[in-house]
Image (cartoon, rainbow, N blue to C red; front, side):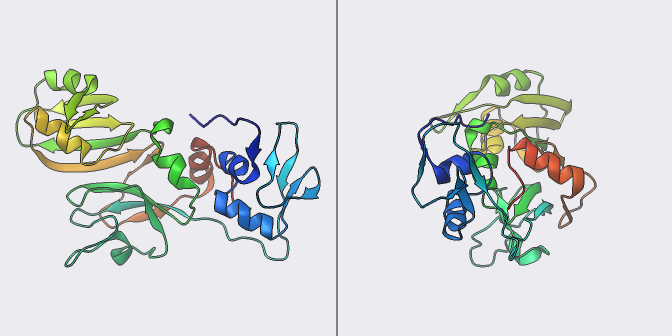
Length: 242
């Protein structure tokens, strides 16, 4: 759910909430003279008093901006998302997209879908808990998963002073579960399963919102284009960049 816009509001925050740019990006556009308030060039720090005020970003025809890139990437097991330590490798070291940054994280021991982009606007829309975007995981466990595990994990458990819960749990077989989360607390699935005495053998993220891992193999990727790109941006209430 997008944050409600309450007036008066600073122009950079307004346009960021409308998904047109980050706050810093709006300030840069204002400095370039591309932001207008009722047909007058905006100034840094301007406030918009009501929804009736016309605020627009006009395209820079002389120097059009490059389109952002969005990539679905299969992070292999044993690779860290970022900030690699000694003797570790991170996504940018092995992916074909060293200039893109990962959205969120996926534990070193886990594998599967992570999104890469150069669009800083995506960070809050994709990761802030208030948006409650679904992420789906297929988990293989060592011990047999009892039917009661579903209700326990969906009801929520306490771990290290936090309440952890799954939106939905499906037990596919004695040692396989599908878990859907709408939050992303550190090592959440491993902590939840440890509480019900299940040991994770393999954890694969297979979906983020409407983007699926599909046929990708470890280290594989696909760039979101066409309807897939449009659907992704719409799902997080963002517009194409100016």
